[in-house]
Image (cartoon, rainbow, N blue to C red; front, side, top):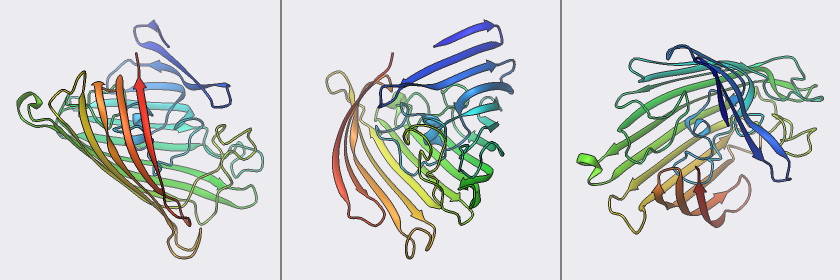
Amino acid sequence: MGAQFHKYVKSTLNLERLRDGNWNVLDGVLQVERWKAFNIWGGRMLTPSDRSNLDGPYFLSTYAFPMVSQYPGAWSGRDDGISVWGKLLKDRFRYVAGVYRGHNWVRGGSNYGEHPLFAARMEYNFLDPEPSPAYYTASTYYGKADILAIGLAGQYETDGVGTAQDKGDYKAWNVDGLFEKRIGEGAKYGVYTLEGAYYQYYTGGVKDIAAGYGQRSGDYGNVGGVNDGTAFLASTAYLIPYRLGWGRLQPLVRYQQFRFRKDMYGPGHPKTTQLDLGGNYVMDGHNLRFTFDYVRYKPMGTRAVGAFLLGMQFQY
């Protein structure tokens, strides 16, 4: 839901139903947008982070959210705070920075009402500007533009991980890129997409408390679950130009790996990996899309498991 109170003052409110039947605020933002180069948002919103998180769950290249994107948030990558963002250089350069409530704000946690989270991201588009609003992103635009975007994000919070007795500073940064090219005039020969991201997460050698510690479940609160390690993601896709019925096929491959800090979660460098093989049947971009995906997931310390995923996405 959205409202506009003045030429430069707007608001957004989005709700989401949780698995236990309760409702939660997904986005609740007061938006002061006087200039394209400098805007102020306050409330609950997406924090500056990687492309996958700024895609949200509905603008990824495939159905399942990547497991290597582990920036903490109060709900679905959001947090409560204030952000400034803007677009410069004919919309090719975008930035966002802010201060937020932060991680482990719970009794018995490392940061019970003491230190905020600082976060920032900047991105440059070498070809067309990304056709997404504000500082949001997408992992495919299905040929609406030629994209070559490189982004850099970072977060820091004093005493952001651990318990009240054993605290560590939380630091994280990542670099991500998206290349999407229309092949031939008017994408006559299809659209090729390549995405990649590299992550570093630091906890100062301290293990974080369990996700959802002190909450009704892990779904609630920006609490616990941060791991120390290195991760990366790589995916490629091709949107076939020929229509099959009402839509077009987009085969896709994605690989992810999270490599935990040496000797902190087990001997050596234990890792978790995931491979996705599948494709999208695209009828109306991100508004109407079906996904078929085979997932091979190997958690740290256990054997790999496979699963088939069939998903549908419908927005209006």
